[in-house]
Length: 445
Ligand code: SF4
Ligand code: SF4
Image (cartoon, rainbow, N blue to C red; front, top):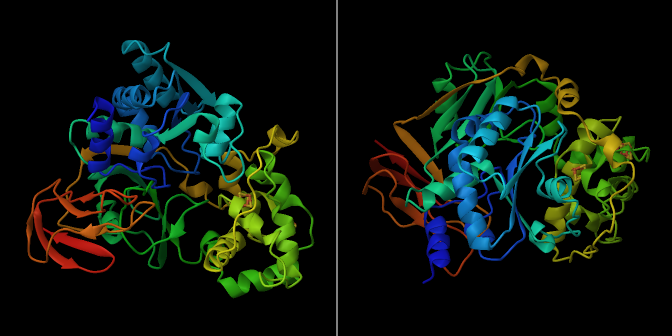
């Protein structure tokens, strides 16, 4: 085994996956050569600050991980992308680049404060001027993108330290909003208690940020960037809780084909043939998959960023959510994705149509939760964890322990065969296996 193969194996064995929310197993990204290696420090979801704190505190470790990744993939240019307004993060990265003598190999790229600056395809264009093809990957244009937390985890993986904790922004209706270093598998109710409890009786917990996050009753996963606690009657909760039937009925009765959703869509702006207003037109005309598929198949190009709903549609319709439902239907019916063109230029209107994050926060009705968060960088310990078996893209992990087994922290408790896409899950605490279901393993101290 070569050194590179050994490191790739260590990254797999440490359970490193895309920590920014995607959950794609990182060892796969290290297996092919690239030209540009891009660190994603955009943290563009409104209100979240965990990546910012990670950059402020651990820029050296992120860069060390990036150096390893660049060496393995043969990347000759590193790009560290971070928003200009994250002054402390920018200063920490600049200092670390100079201290480690990496300023020639890695260029700092300062991003404007728009959403979704951290979307991989948007980030590749912003930092390199290259456009990822429709339905493509950054690697199609010689780039690999990793979240900054993922890069730090690569640094630990080569020291055989697995992913057991992560920084999570906990905010909204909790007594003490903060960024915590939480064990993977911590129950969300325990997280809320660690922050002094909820400040309202009826609340809903969103896993992630307010744009792409979803209501979640469960646990901290390797991909959990934020935990947003909102009153159950908050407008955002009402909007994202609309069910499938109501989404379709609202589209049929309200959409007036104004084109605003398409105009602001970041994938349309990149030159992709995603035109959500045409999808909504077919839906509002009652045309289902059985009669017409071409426009509906555009759903394959959607990244579900929700800009169309929050920044585009004057009627508060949600084309991105409709496309999420459509995508499930398309997959179920085995209808192929016909969109694979490679645009040669972005739309000329692009620069004027990127939504500023500060405006999104106002529109989402979240201004009262906007504040600098304190960080507690110490890894917390909790009396119980519930480790979900499907945290990554690929095959769910299968338990390799039995009920009643004694477990030590960092021990592998579930794994995926090496022939399949996926990686192991480790216990963050000492304890015993209290329960195993098809979906999770519970470990108690
Ligand atoms: S912005 Fe709203 S109303 Fe306008 S075309 Fe899109 S979905 Fe229809
Ligand atoms: S959610 Fe809306 S804005 Fe975002 S990619 Fe999909 S269609 Fe475009």
